[in-house]
Image (cartoon, rainbow, N blue to C red):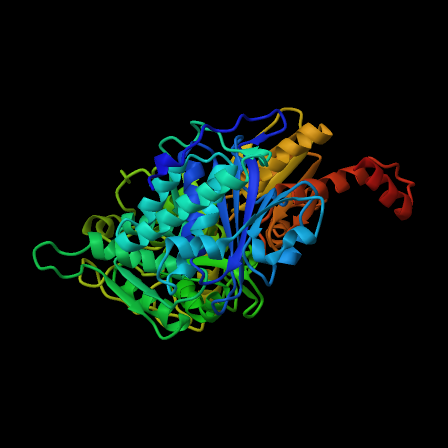
Length: 630
């Protein structure tokens, strides 16, 4: 049956229908083939021009365990996770009852009819679907039914939410175009789900709908890890050394695919790059450091446990002054923690990684676009400052699907930094590997096989000429120069983004993926409480002068981040005056789920309510006053 045979005139959208503003949660089990169905659903809404985002919450071990995928569609462009669920697709018997009980009254539930969820509550709209019966009709091979069963709920949702079935067909064909048999079976399941909903639910409309918009025209959908991999390719990376770890593995896996496609010598057919899967994260970074000493642009990717193991080689690269690019796709810790949950828990750790006095440059991307551009910037900064550069992503950014404008092709030459040339040597007169000749803390380096004398790379005490030394003056001169180099970096790292509102007394500071919740929370604060806020998004460490100036310009500043201890807040405290610190309040989110706007708004609302109470108010009255204000 062709999809056109199933198309009915779209139901009229009533005044009670929420158009292009809802969230869907699909509850399935890991390994059931739900990823294809979920991505088809996400892309279909995107293709209809509606801003959309997808969040995958999956188990960290074996197949068969619960997994949840949340899709948010929003006509205003809000793409942070929404705390509330409007429509649940319940496919997992183990979690179905709990998932239904967590919903707000009035929500819709599409479910496998065998679960009998309509008996759990009476204040929800239930849509039972006989998945086993439908899949048996469209898939004769019983062994394959498990893999196409989920596509039925896509068809049901296409009818209920008025998603153009042709867009579903298009998205599915894009997903499975190289697998003809799988495509045919899934198309049949999709159409069967649509037909069932058309027959059984036509008089039971869902008060949610998708209508065409033009907000996603010319945009792409991509994961942050894939975007970062593309940025590394464009930056000229030639050596990749890594050890697999969730949630960073797909970064190097995708990069390997890009390298094999674009970095093979057309004449010889040989690779012009080297990729090594090391025995552990320690060896991975050791290889990166060694390759960079030889002049290669080299990198690795890992997560918190890997960063822990890399501490010693990071200290070597910092003190011996060797470039290295390290992508930290952060997850929940400590220890093994929650490997498939997101966090911003490595910021303070990475900033000072290694024993002794160390300070590292951190880049803090908030989007897939910045994952791409900051990947390139990281290599330039690593070679300019001859030091490790950490690109601090997180699981939400790295492994989830985000919208973006197509990435620009780089038009600037690679910045190799201070590499000694005959002209430079003649100008400075005398060269020392660790000698600061112009006051910025950055010495000149030579590359093996190119112009310039060879030298010892010293991880132990050394003087300006790289000679071994345990003299106190040599050590302090060297460690002070490294700090001077860090200070120089303030003018070269990505600058913060400022949205200043004239007259606003409240400021917000955030970084990374918290940005998307902040965008929405600021609107909630203004619309619900009449609180105007200015916003500074920090994009790198070391901080620039903009941070202190922003704090000085506001009465109260909320620092929002996704960890328990307020790690960015702690780094700020190290550089601010007492008066500036007194203006700061830490707002923290650390349950492993991507931060949502409502949680930020409610915490700021509570703080602002307490600020409005008279000074003599007791703690008990303050609680009551805050509750009344809410």
